[in-house]
Image 1 (spheres, rainbow, N blue to C red):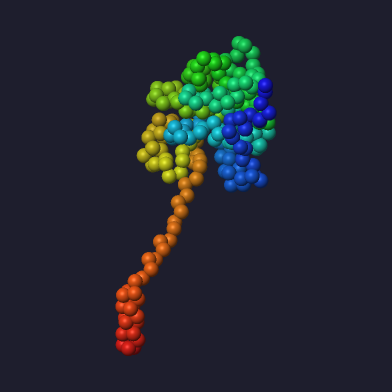
Image 2: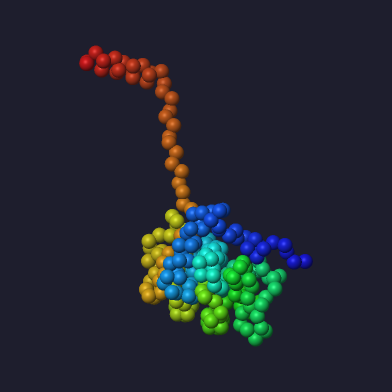
Length: 231
C-alpha cells in the first residue's frame, strides 16, 4: 500500500518556508542566489563530519534554487554510507532500463537521481560521472552528496567532475584546522564556500549570590558606619 506521506515527509525533511522559518528560508535563498551568480551548475556538498545530514541540506538548497530559477534541479544521492533513497524505495522511479540512474521527484521541480544498482548503496566514481554526463542537459543545477568519498583518490576524482564544492559544517564544531585540511583537498578555483547548519547557542546564566551569614551582615554594617564617621 502506497504511503500518503509526501516524499519530503518520508525523508524526514520539512521544507523551510518564509512563513514557517523566515531566517532559515532566507539563508537558503541567499546560498542559492550566490550559486546561481557564480554560474556553477554541478555542486558537491562535502560534510565536515559524519553527524551532518547532507541530503537535508542539499534538498533545502535545491528547493531554493527551483524557487529562484523556475528550473528543474537535481539532487544526486551518491551517499555510499546512508543513502537517503532508502526512505523512498517504494516510490515510482522514472527512467529507461538502459539508463544508469532513475529519477524520483521530491517536490515541485526538484528531483532525486538514484543509481540503478540496488545491490550497492550510493554511487561509485564511474557511476557518478555517467549520471552527471547524462543529466547535465536536463537539469539547470545538480547537487551531489559527497558523504562517504573519504579516500583522497576518490575525493580528487569526484571533485574533478564538479564545477564547485561547498563544505558543510556545524557552528562550534568546524575548526579552522578542519576547514584548512578540507580546503587543501579542493582546487581553489572550485571552492564555492562553507555552509553552517544547525545552531550553536550558549545560555549565559547569572550566578545567584549566596545568602550572607549574620556575621557578614554585621561586618558590612560596621564598615558602613565607619565610612559614614570618616566623612
